[in-house]
Image (cartoon, rainbow, N blue to C red; front, side):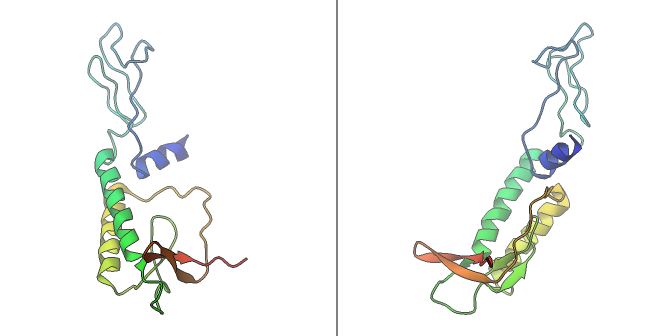
Length: 154
């Protein structure tokens, strides 16, 4: 259960509401009118439950920040299939390192700055049993451009 809590918090998951004081599903008040509580959350007012994420980072902000980091990561991994020497540099990502077109590019610097900001504000992701791939990188054609991917040895 703790691992699921960590995953929800770190991944900016959906907010969970506590049940009602009398066990009802709507978070409504019981005889005393107090709302339910959730793990780590604060009691809600009558008719609402506490939030699982009340004590942690702003879930909406973390979801928005993570989406921006992913967009910037894609930009850092954007490459041209007909240009040699790309996709050999590795940089940090949410859980495992990734290959980028160039470690010294502005796109990669912007991505790494946003990733660092995200990790500082929202915390690390729970990388549960996900093995990291290793191997050299290559520019894989995608439409008229390409994206850096790992070539996994058999």
